[in-house]
Image (cartoon, helix red, strand yellow):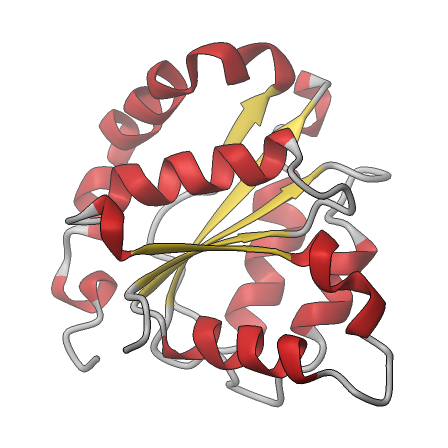
Length: 172
């Protein structure tokens, strides 16, 4: 059975803080944390461009079948990682149609606060995902108390945006 909530991490390091943040946010947004599956793309990096890529294909199908996906990336050169882009490039037009996506950006610098809105959100929308709330940007310094950052993001309108019938993905 597919997991209704996916935490997708585009950090090129296995077990990164970005992956931990993605899982934490997905568990906060899930009705039941047991419904969350984490996909750490760092563990699949060797297959992204390989002729044999069964694990990547399975991850693509899992994300496509999810009701909600938290798409997380650290900021690299003021944008998302090439690893995340390479994975998402494997979808065709509207490959994420009907999937609700939450862009999550982990940054060391407050100057990159809009990286999720300016770069990651348009990519997800281009793939057909529904992105009803603003991107969640978390500074490295906030990772120690991630709940506080998530609470502020939810109180700032994300909770209402994600609670709408369209955001819930009633067709799924």
